Image (cartoon, rainbow, N blue to C red; front, side, top):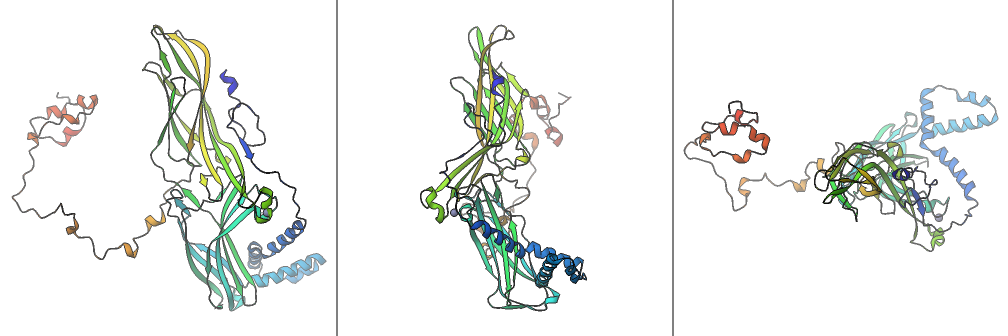
Length: 519
Ligand SMILES: [Zn+2]
């Protein structure tokens, strides 16, 4: 019987190959979506292609590579390129022209703050402090560069991978500006060489961490832009990765019952687990023996399986243009997906005790997430992206029968059960040695009192003064009462040192729990 249940236990994580069985909670992706109307934007293909080309020409990577090439081959004669055919010469001419302009100035960001980690839950995290310097390097060849615009923006972008209208950028993502820096109030002339502009920002603790799930994505980007008086623009962009770490607390203990049997499962799990590394799971199954006058029935554990499920959920909104597809603005389409990101099967490794009242089966094992599964940490973003995890444990128990007189005379009754238990697992980043920014900061001005706290500040009911009485005698240890309460268990009572110590002063040797040969 149990053998038949097993093959369907773990499913591949590809949601399209679901073999439907009686199990309800399996790998599945569901979309309560409205029917998608084939979409109609005809010029968008052309437009985006042209746009892409323009983007590429302007991209900092391209400029960078040209600048690097210039460094490597400073004396390269670009006029030679002209002899290499018509189309090529036209391109290299463009390149040479671009190189001239690119060389004028270069932007860069130097990050000074430690990796961005929000410690604690979104509701009580103090956030992550981000600080650095925006650097603009004016090339020697440019002489003086006069900027009339110099600014930087910090943006968050939430993308759904299941947009209401395919290919509509506005349906797919929403960008919010978190902060904006304007470094200039009037045109600024910069000499050749590097110039730095410091900045800082406190990422609020409630912001969702960066993530890239199968249904949605959350990204943060820092984008700087400078423009000189001739209209030439210089840009720089870098992604910022924000993580969240919930600090581990006490282990969590949960109980599940399985009526109408007397079986009770008790599980002890860590309060948080991490995408990489194993974590211990303690399991106790009690109520496994049902003892009658002459005979008993009992459950024997035959197999144990565990798996870690990841549930992702997103509500895809529609842009104003496509809101009609889902019945008006302010609505969204819910998409859900569940996949298995770790699993294992044990056929032994537990302890069975049928002798104590009710009987008990105990087991401890290590579980882990498969790092190749690219797990998404627990997340509940305000925009509707959610990720959470469950540990599912399935036990296959078979019933057997035996007379009380001879418990070795076992007969299987043929009954078998699958006990399924599900527990929430909180997957979070490791906190490592990091501490929150507000805990590593020295006290701020307002927190520092006018003077050091005085001793007179003790509460009214207590006071303290110097002792001027007669010299204090050392206590006579021999007169002290025997301390029976120190006898904690049978092991320590075996040591006779406390008893033999009576009548003389105790020494440190008496306090060690070694068996006393003199007694
Ligand atoms: Zn749209």
